[in-house]
Length: 77
Image 1 (cartoon, rainbow, N blue to C red):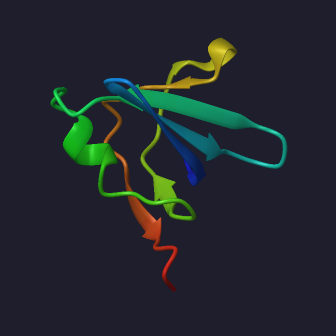
Image 2: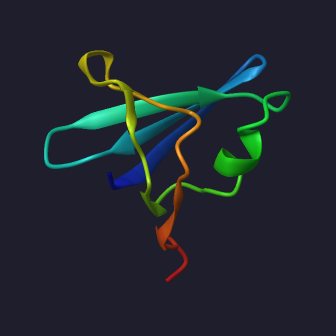
């Protein structure tokens, strides 16, 4: 699944990443520096288009933090 990173919110030990998934659909995931999946998510910045996302709980709009996410398009270009 694809999405565009639109917000990064640090909060205590956690970081929330919000993605725009489509016209009116959003998803979010959480990570923190002490978690093994942090290395996946800390490489992205606001505006990056990302693929490889998968739902952990679509009803709650929660993206699986263990998704093998990767760049489609870097926001610098």
